[in-house]
Structure formats: structure tokens, C-alpha cells
Image (cartoon, rainbow, N blue to C red; front, side, top):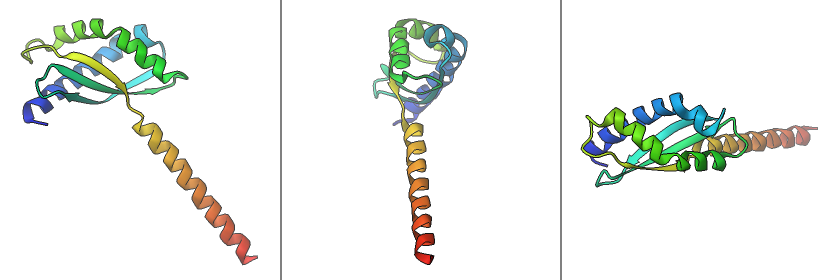
Length: 125
């Protein structure tokens, strides 16, 4: 990713994070949504926004609600960054499950370690 792409992605990420803080409750209720990463396409026409969702049973439903409001979010974003970019990118939203996966793996490793210690203590007896 080039310097300009990184700068634009950073600008979009800061602005979209503020938008979610202010407007998010109207879109997806009381779920906690965090913008984890923004990637710009080489032509700067599309911003791929990765979101982590917490405090929600249906994470995919939250992402669908955000996608449904993408036009409105782009309009709000445009009013905030129009002086910083040449053209306002279209927004694509994706569920980022990296932290969920890390938590699941951590639990799995803890379980394996506990099983290993249990086996070792049984062998000593």
C-alpha cells in the first residue's frame, strides 16, 4: 500500500470511527462496533472497512445493518473529509473476527495446558 493510500485510509478510519460513535446507536442498537482497519483500493475509489462487533448475539446482522446504511454513512463521511481527499470512496464493510479467533485459540491453549498438567499429576501418583 502506497503512502497516499495509507494517509487516506487513516483519515477515513478516524472519521468513520467518530461517525459510528455518534450515529451507531441509530444503526445497530447497543452493540459495540470498533473499526479495526481500513484498506483503500489502489485507485482510492473503495474503502474496505473491517469492523469488530461485541455485545451482540447476531454479529452478521449488525454488519448487514451497517451495509444497509452505507449510502448515508458515505454522505456523512463526505461532509467530514471532503477537503482532505479528491473523491469520496465507496464504503464496503466486513466483519473482522481476528480478536474472536485469538480469544478462542487462547482458550484452546489454556485447556491443552490444563490437560497436560492433569496428566503429569496423574503420572506422579
